[in-house]
Length: 83
Image 1 (cartoon, rainbow, N blue to C red):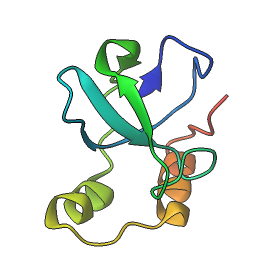
Image 2 (image 1 turned 180 degrees about the horizontal axis):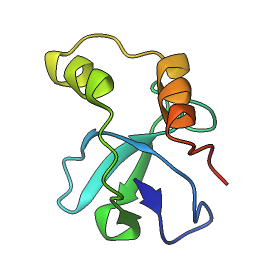
Image 3 (image 1 turned 30 degrees about the vertical axis):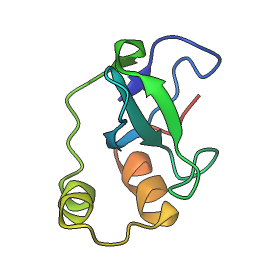
């Protein structure tokens, strides 16, 4: 997912999960926004580009621990290094 609005425009994120407030989600990039401190983002301000990070998705769904290094390397593998 890419940010299409805000100060972080163009930055690539991994969707961590939904927020309790409708229309918002939690995202992380493993660098500036870590798993321990994800960013709450309006879902209308994100663009899904079709990249599925299956290994991370499975771990998140199963409730297993995901490390910031895994997120960074997964985003780097797709050539998405943020800004």
